[in-house]
Image 1 (cartoon, one colour):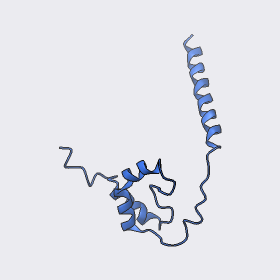
Image 2 (cartoon, one colour):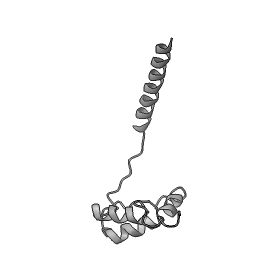
Image 3 (cartoon, one colour):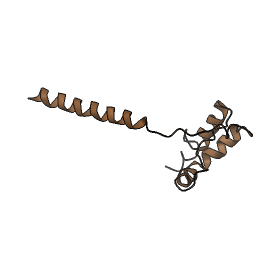
Image 4 (tube, one colour):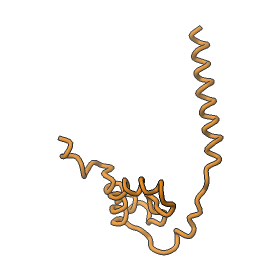
Length: 98
């Protein structure tokens, strides 16, 4: 009897994964070619965008022209600044939790 329950759970899990994969194919792909022209964002812009990321996340729901992560960035340095700015390594809130 227990083996039947395990295979039923596995079948339900496989069904949920299949439905999720099917629905992810309906996702809209954004056209970012116009964003990739102009200013390239570097480390300090990544730092700033990381600091204001919580505000951007909320505003994204109400405005179409606000994003959390700049599409026209210079790669690793922007991502590094964004990580530090968002507190990803705990630099900004480590002592306040004590």
